[in-house]
Length: 200
Image 1 (cartoon, rainbow, N blue to C red):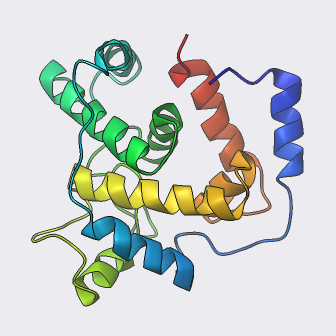
Image 2 (image 1 turned 45 degrees about the vertical axis):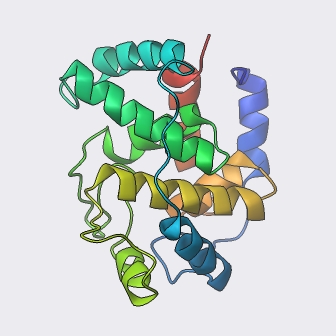
């Protein structure tokens, strides 16, 4: 994905301003609930290490440079990035966009906890675990501080919001954050994407 020029980025942000709507911190829409149930029932998948070698090496170096204390161990960084790439790919998302969301949501802190109660890398609300348990679509001992569970739920939610926003990143990111109609959060994510995580 190419970097957005400042004018194009500003135009995208202005296009995203609209009326407020509930994001993942509110009651989930029925369609999103159904998608989450299907996603959590899928087996885990990982990207072939050799196919992703260049990406893994590049992003591991960036993660070590920008967030040296978040995942200091090189092997753990590679494993985390493999999970990000696998879950993003499964959800048909740009892995770099997912990294930018994590950058803003939790600064790559696995055990991040927001004042609203959102947990983990992608700041998922606990009611999603209750949904998975109620429908028996979750895996045994799921918790939102588990990287695979957190990333799968976060990527599924983000993909859903991209779909209903017709791939408008500004609108989708605002919905993800529960701030639809306000450009601040999308701007932060897109700035992180363009300055830290875009390949090339």
